[in-house]
Image (cartoon, rainbow, N blue to C red; front, side):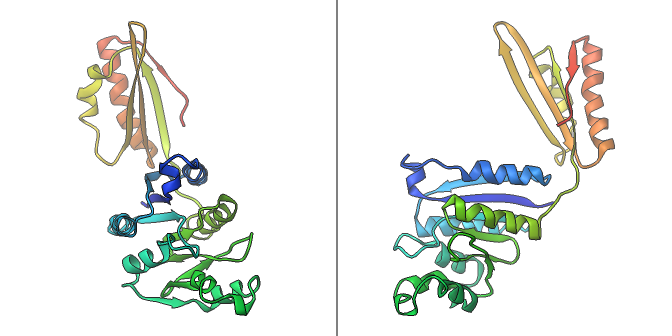
Length: 248
């Protein structure tokens, strides 16, 4: 089981100067393939904080990360160095393939002292193709991916990463129902669910009427049916009306 994380780096998102679209995009692409995000972080351009978030994700042995932003040439582009500090013992090198790609759009005499930094990557980095301007993104260990903050550059890289490394997950089986009661009445059944099952309880209220939407899912159809049946049995015992919804 892979745990997918998104790290969106940009103070301009937090102060309202720009709006984020990365979360929605990654979520959509993952759902198409049968995956879900475990967490998404929108964080400031602060080197130590970026490293702290990267370390948190690195320490999850099942993590896959998509990091947006901070791989340009300006002084507030900290991602390359932060990723080297966290994932490659602070070791960086001029990636010759990334350098060659830069040279297709930048004259050699204009590469120094700034543009060349876009090819200065953590050791053992592999490249993600930039379909817009040939300034590559990169990835480490086939699970930590670093892309620009610009959607037209980043999104083809994310699709490339998913297609090559995480094309499809096993099918998840889900069953839902809406019961004419409060969720409190079903807590005894909720407490019987194993921790590894996908479960949600969403209360609804319209005037004085209370409803709760129960959702159960797992990668084993029999497990889904087994624990969903517990709710049906309890609702029938309590003579509470409910409607079974579409599987999602």
